[in-house]
Amino acid sequence: MEGELWVKRENRISHLQPNHPGDRLRSGLCARGCLWVGKGRARSIRFFSWDVGVSMIIRRYRDGDEEGIVRVMNESFATFNQWGLTPEKWNGYEKIDPGFSREKAFVAESEERIVSHVQLVKREMNFGKFVVVSGVANVCTDPDFRSKGLATQVLQEALRDAAQWSALSALDTGYASGAHRIYRRLGFSPFHFFRRFSGERWEVERAIRRLKKFAGDLTSEVRPFEEKDKQDIERIYSANAEKVRGSCRRDPAYWEGKLFSRNSWQTFFYRQFDAREVMVLPGRAYAYVDWDEPARRLTVREANSEPGDNLALAAVYASALSLKEGINEAIIVAPEGDQSIDYLLADFYRFRVQNSFMVSVLNPAELLKQMAGKDNGSGKRVKLQLYNDLGYLDPVTVGLANFLPTANVSSDATIYVHQSIFMRMVSGLEDPIEALTSDKLVIVGDVEGVAVALRNHFTRHPFVLWPSDRWRSFQRDHHATRIWSS
Image (cartoon, rainbow, N blue to C red; front, side, top):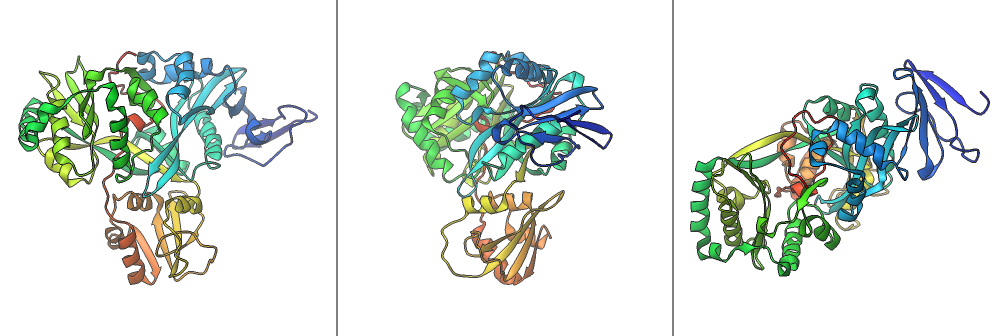
């Protein structure tokens, strides 16, 4: 046909047709042999799926797509279905969470029907400095169109967009699942398995006694949240977020939308705010508590005190754990690598959750610019060669003193390190010398000098990503946990 292009590759016939006569044909083949048309934000991918037998378009969100997006999400995720996700709630996310934008929603469309969806969520996470991260969430496909590679292609288009405004992408999914393997083939690597403290009523009772003894009379000063506590809570959180790696930057609109007007226990799930579920030691500490009545399970999903004020932290922990009687299980989310917290919660068992937090470095040079300190203009230079499971990323020459990229490409040594190990070093979760001795990191050149610089630059730090800031990226939710009605 005149004005149209067809490509046959990997048992798939791809059909390209401009969105309108003014569109200019750009670029080349995508991963599965399709071509894309349009330019800038109007770009879309049009192809004929030989597997499905219909024409497909991959594109960014347009007005009215929320009906189809919500339908696919409810069909794919038991949690959204139970919670009662509606188009109105989906549109409302934009007002609740500044990191959510309909413009960062991507879909696959077949005959004017949304059949696959990927959402990007913007976060600023602490990796020594606050870094812009594109969170991948809600990867889902209509049941009638699964196993055709649609979600993969929608995610590839989303990641092309993410690379324009973020240097790092991240997601959270079940380890060794089908989705996990797909993400690895797209350049993501397992980065961390989150830890939690857990105990039954016996551990809870012992912990309350220990915490009350440690905190002394402060426990009696803890009370439920009041409106006047807002500024103190924001200030306490911000002071800790500057020190604890993995913490996300929160502006006042984020606090008001997700944590003061609603009780958000995850990016996409919330219920009516209940001041009795926020324990406050005025001006010194706070704790957010979730209660699952049928399971008799209490979760302390976030607790902070003024940095170093362990007495105040013990007081709010003790009050939070005493909030309900007849607890079958208590779960506490807390920063990892903080010895004072490990001491306060010594009565609890520590577990790793099966969900894998994955990362993909989209732009090594830009990532290092955001994380690096000031340029001192002198010192040795090294070539940092990151790689993932697919191969090498773009090499970056950096100053050894601050890891700031430099225009001078000559170097005194080369560091070879997997992206996940590098990000764990940056996060304070991995010791560079241990990585070097276990061959997780290889230095070619001045081994001793580079090792000393790595040890000085990448030190251990507490790490946490609080549940309210987290986003999930299930392809299918087989093991839905009980959730609250909104």
